[in-house]
Length: 362
Image (cartoon, rainbow, N blue to C red; front, side, top):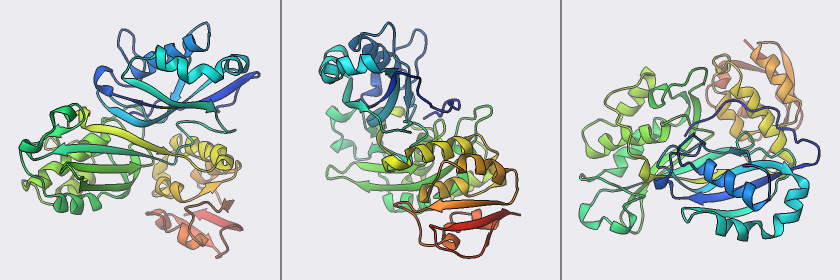
């Protein structure tokens, strides 16, 4: 999964409307999400179909929650497109039916409608959830699932894999598990990484993070498989993480076992604040605020924080008004215990979360 270049402010042009599109696709026949000249991609096919269905002069420009790699599937992908309001108003009623006819069978649009104010498919997201399927019993491998399940010849100890996975949770620099991109941060907040067996005996890994860098999920799975096979100790993936460089012992697993299952967003009234905060953090030097990305999932702030965060990153004393969200913790001091941020910030006073707290960076 690749995070693209930072977008602009996301403001709509006059007489335009932002449409949210929820979709699913079989990634086997696509060279990933992002449009590429001469290649069949999800974005290319969908944007062309939307332009045709809405009777627009060209393809629609899309912004997506997760730019899946070549061969990766999605059940819960989310995108948005800005388009002329009159075009959407004229064709919205028949859009889904027309898209079903216009799109090939390996892409389905589940829903499409006007997004709430402030919605951004990429920057408003709280987290993404992926699943990776592995069948480690060759006799039970289902030929009908061969395009979305990795077949492994060795049995996996999911208990050992989960023990190793727990050591990777939290906010870290995942450079050891990412393909490096110039100017892009590899700091991510990994919220969940665990394995369980379904009724069919297939091992399914659930991976949740605020965002993912290129090849991150498949590299994490590739580091856990040797642990499950017994060829590596449970502490090995964490050791690779600490060394912060690609390890030749970590094999990036094939893409076909991976699927984007869900993208979670805050309540509508908090969408704009979340997007502004995410943009500010993605563009900042996060080395000055270790632990901040992991804390973002526990709070949402007003629009002013997009400006105030720049002062925080500049190591200046600021006052920030934290607003309570569904995942918020009960007081300011607990809030600052998020990940390792407590080591970089000082709370002046202890006040209710709905009031003001001064945060000073050492």
